[in-house]
Amino acid sequence: MKLKLPKVRVGRKIFGNGGILAKAKKGCASGMAPPCGGGPDSTAASTPRERTKLNQKAAKLMSQSTKRRLAVSAESDIEKAAAYVPRAIEKNEAARERIQHALEKNYLFKSLDKEQTKTVVDSVEEVKYNPNDIIIKQGDEGDKFFLIEIGECEVWLKDPERIRPEMVKRYGPGDTFGELALLYNAPRAATVKAITSCTLWAVDRPTFRAILMQTTNNKRQLYEKFLAEVPLLKTLTAYERSAIADVLDAEYYEPNTDIIVEGQEGNKFYFLEEGEAEARTGDKVLMKYKRGDYFGELALLSNNPRAATVRATTKCKCVSIHRDSFKRLLGKVEDILERRKEEYEKTSAGTS
Image 1 (cartoon, rainbow, N blue to C red):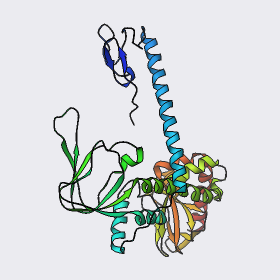
Image 2 (spheres, rainbow, N blue to C red; image 1 turned 135 degrees about the vertical axis):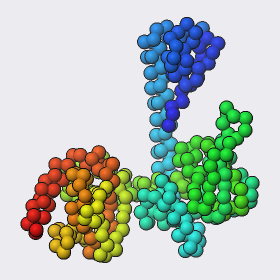
Image 3 (spheres, one colour; image 1 turned 45 degrees about the horizontal axis):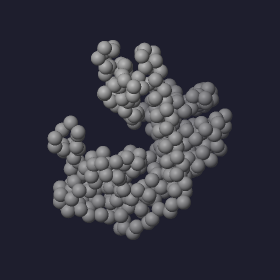
Image 4 (cartoon, rainbow, N blue to C red; image 1 turned 180 degrees about the vertical axis):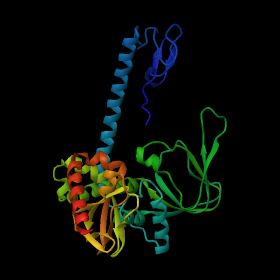
């Protein structure tokens, strides 16, 4: 998010963004230097060094102010989320499946587990619009998040440098919009207009924010408790386990389903949260897994294909960490993983 600083008066001119990145006044260094000179109202300094210090101080003060506002807002949201009970609006099974499919395409909801997704699906309500109806208007306060069930919409953007608004995007069935204003308490960034008769599913602001806050908080509490029981992670602090909990994705497997397949590229590391599984190569069982065990690290440590197939022997719930987060979050236990790799290689050699 771009940091907005107050306008600074320099002589008869006003520079935006606190004077930072403003062009220099005539007689000063050209390019992107901060403004200098000025009359009695000027906050600019007389030397480049002083001007730099001034701008850094202004940026620091604004940053602190922004952080305080966000902290207060976050605390308020957490309190509201804890007290809020999401509503459940009746809908048929076909509609529920379509809503869930649309949610899975949205970056905010695609990582939710089954229970969390159900909470969201329960809460949405049906709304209808006629052709040319304005669904959301640029600059207005946001009060709903939308999923399109039927119909098409256009997104119009009004740019201060253009005389007329510009149509920048079209939405159709399965698309979602309206989340940014709700997430950041910001005005609507664009106007969305129905171009056909539209049926949409809407989530209001309190429900949207409460669900996100609750599901994120619940997810963290759920996985922190589980991760604290994982022997591999005993040496990590509660904060470090919390960071891992935030990036875990839940995956579900039926009995006799392959979780990872020998020879394929590996991009995930797994913890087994529920159920039992086994590592196999050909007909040979190399290892058995239960709650709290982990697997899939070998391909990520060595950048080699999967060395074995891991198959669910009962119904399983796994939580996975993608390769991008693996090194960053599990660096402190990498030596343990390397020792496990050597043990696995010995086991594999013994069965060959």
